[in-house]
Image 1 (cartoon, rainbow, N blue to C red):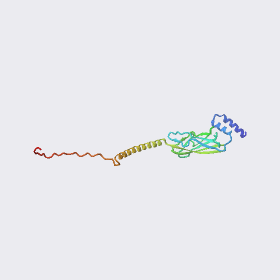
Image 2: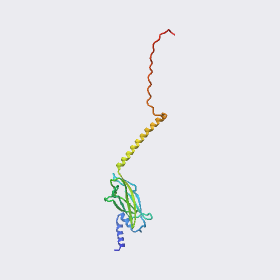
Image 3: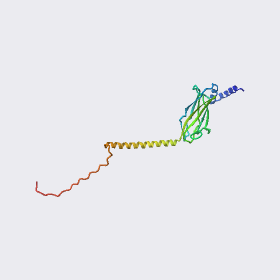
Image 4: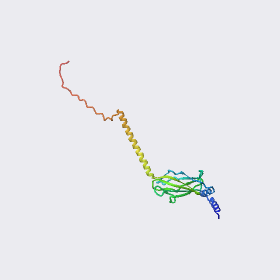
Amino acid sequence: MTLRAFTSALLTILLGLELPAARAWAQAQEQPPPSKLNLIIVEGEGAINNVKQRSVREPIVQVEDENHKPVAGASVAFLLPGNGASGTFANGSRLLTVMTDQNGRAVMNGFTPNNVAGKMQIRVTASFRGQTATAVMTQTNVLAAAAAGGIAAGKLIAILAAVGGAAAAGVAVAVTRNGGSSPAGPTPTPAPTVISPGSPTVGPPR
């Protein structure tokens, strides 16, 4: 069997399958190869991963040719860091390879962050018929409890600062009303007036 016949038979089998990735790959083989690949991060750049909840938003990338048209059937590899803030995919590996759909998009699904907080870089590589493109996606793993505690502490500091500012403003107003002098103390009680009777005097009527 010649290579052409083998490829034709393989395409027939793949087109008969109800798999979007297989259909996209088969359709891509019928198109002329691109002279250049562009890898675009659609979603996931700068994302915050909640380590406690183990919930993340699935990143999405798109592969385009030199004319910015989507490339279906391209292979996209997502590689997680080997240490520090990182995670694993559903199979426990740090490497996930998926195929782009008819829109040239690939989803990094099955990712679970580890228990290390901090920034991490996910390396993405797209390959298609001899052409490659790379990109780096930056995300951050955070501890939800620590983040909440930091917010609560910040609010408490703000409240205390506001109360202190109000007290200082009250003192300033009192000083202004007293002509700029220091607040006077309590007014002293005046001493009582004492009347002493003198010696009686007897004389003729006037």
